[in-house]
Image (cartoon, rainbow, N blue to C red; front, side, top):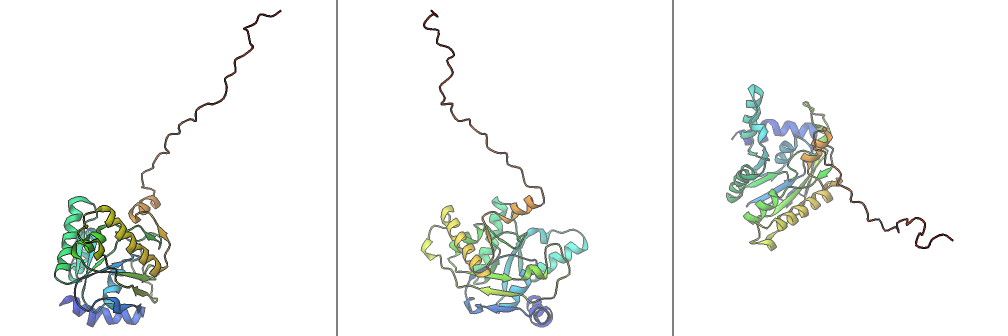
Length: 256
């Protein structure tokens, strides 16, 4: 109820009036049945603008830190995310991340739309970064189409670290659904997961016009903040010395 009231009565009309979002390809989102909306991630506001324009409810996998904040602000943030159809996504890997994907699988099994950011975190510089394979794993296991979604200009509306948004127009492009049924039965194959993920990221690059970086966004953020581990240069193996050694004067014959 809260989701629909905010979308249709309070937040939705105000956001549309202020930011005048333009949309292309919305008819690529199925009217019914499960599907994954895989979006690039430029701003905190992506999770607000995109569901606002989709007629069906969209359940997002959002980073778990939004649900574990301390104090009044942290609790209010967690409440807002839960009331707006968002689920915590643990990005630490292993069993915790697998459990988060299970929550996404439950959404799909019930015929819902699942929103996910393959990059795993917001881009630090408006470029498109390497996708994590969780999106492909979900698509392959559930046997559902993936609709690539390119958010345009949201990084200018609310750059990282800025609390109050800039009032300017934003847009989004919904690409044609990607069908991975050719990989049926191979959901656990890591090479297949990587191939499908790269296909999704390629479509996002084409739709958004972003420069692609073959590196995880989280690693790029650490490097930009000076916290990334320094990888030492590999040891240099000296090339074999092929020169003929200096023999000195030939003493095999005595001087006359």
